[in-house]
Image 1 (cartoon, rainbow, N blue to C red):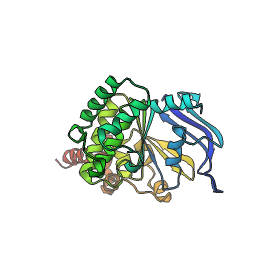
Image 2 (cartoon, rainbow, N blue to C red; image 1 turned 45 degrees about the vertical axis):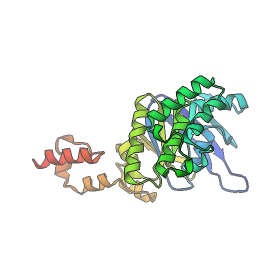
Image 3 (cartoon, rainbow, N blue to C red; image 1 turned 90 degrees about the vertical axis):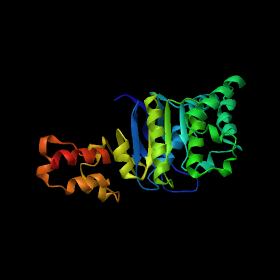
Image 4 (cartoon, rainbow, N blue to C red; image 1 turned 60 degrees about the vertical axis):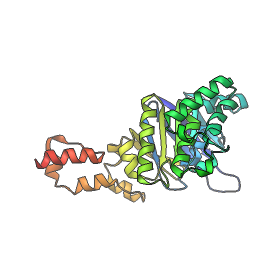
Length: 280
């Protein structure tokens, strides 16, 4: 697989701490894929994202964007942040203006885009994210799910090649989560590489093409969802949960699971289809 972003022996500590947030981290983000990065709080997921857009720079090691080391000059970082977008876990950290229209247009204006294009691209993005009816509503009147979609729109309007999402479904109700995941599917189909940091093993299993497991600032496992969750003892040993669908699947008799080389289902719909075939 071709990688779009890599880290090479990347180490970083926050000021005033003796513990490394990242310790000689080596990982690759495959281009064009949906990657989930899983791990406990403090495993380094958010720190990695801040390194990826140059907010923090390494104590040692490198971050590679399309195989070239990041440059930390103002000009290069400005260009990088149009190619790599980051959506924070808490949209309040990202929404700085009064209305969705103002906030989404801010990044374009900061990038020096002509005003006519700013108006057009902002309107189109709000329509794409189904936010046009809220364009001039005060931000503080929006629900958490709506705020997350505005924050996402503000990043997407810059047309990044890589989108990083830090716990994007945190604190969302089930319907809002499903709507956000549907938006991400549409974004991915447009050719954007997606990376999601998440605690939700069910979401990681059903959504991702590739999964990275981080622990104590290092990447300790990587592979497809089937690869990662093929060893329940290893996952549980890290204090992580197995996806519920896999737990149910493994509870079925082995003779049924192994019939005709069936792969474990990755969605409720797949599970229903498989069980209908099995018990028909």
